[in-house]
Amino acid sequence: MPPVTPQLIKELREKTGAGFADCKSALEAANGDVQAAIEYLRQRGAVLAAKRADRVAREGVVLAATTPDGRKAVLLELNCETDFVARNAEFLRFAEAILQVLLERGIGSEEELWNSSLGEKTLGNLRDEMAAKIGEKLQLRRYQVLTTEGFFSAYVHAGSRLAAVVEVSLPEPPEELRTLVRDLAMQVAAMQPQYVRREDIPAELVERELELHRQQALSEGKSPEVAERIARGRLEKFFQESCLLEQAYIRDPNRTVADVLQEAAQRFGLTLEVRRFWRYFLGETEHGGG
Figure 1 (cartoon, helix red, strand yellow):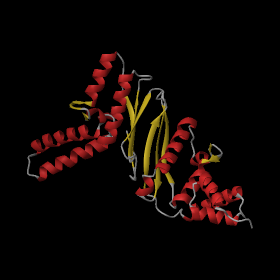
Figure 2 (figure 1 turned 45 degrees about the horizontal axis):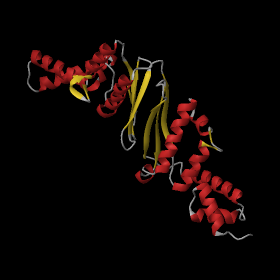
Figure 3 (figure 1 turned 120 degrees about the vertical axis):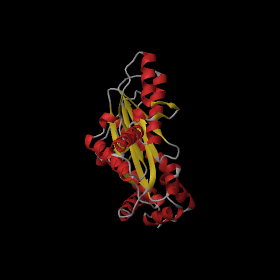
Figure 4 (figure 1 turned 135 degrees about the vertical axis):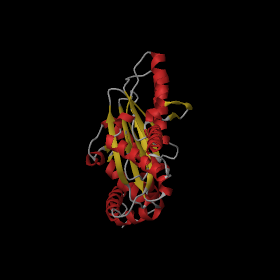
């Protein structure tokens, strides 16, 4: 067997990003053949990834982005096992690569995504190689590819643990309105609305909320008439917290989001309506959308 020289180990490390010991072992197993050693590392990565399949991945990143014309948007959550890896630049680049593939190709199934080529490799190959390199399970927990005849804007909070996308009815809005829609995405991320408007809330939920506050007021010794007034006042507060359009605007708490949209529409002579929104928070049991 030819000697495994430091030069060969360096070459293999540069090509694969694997550690010194792994590269040395791979070259020894491949009798000094660099290409065979690369294949050895790839196969070993797949085996180790399978062994890690039952481990829990709770850390990671949440990302969102749109195409330049705002007609397509993607949100995703990519998980790893530790915060240390989640803050790793290479892990973040891999998450961003997945995001771009989804944006550019509009892939539906996860199987199709992992079989997508990126350069000379598939995303699945790159995932397994990275998992082998960092020694952690990587899991694409969820993603959505969205399209619209209107306009999307996305916001990702610092640290990439929280992201949101907002859809409005107006295609190709002027730059000032694009900024406003992005601010609305930030509003969704920060203020956690559950619905766009109060009419979107199921009637049974409204009645249940009203009855809850009614019973609370009665238990405090209020008369039925007073309890009803209190309950309806608290229901209004519920609407103001739960409905995006009724929330205080994050950049000017003296105005509601509905006020800001109406003023912008009048100023530009356009119809501007929020259709839907989506919000991802790292590790949440369900993703929010309205």
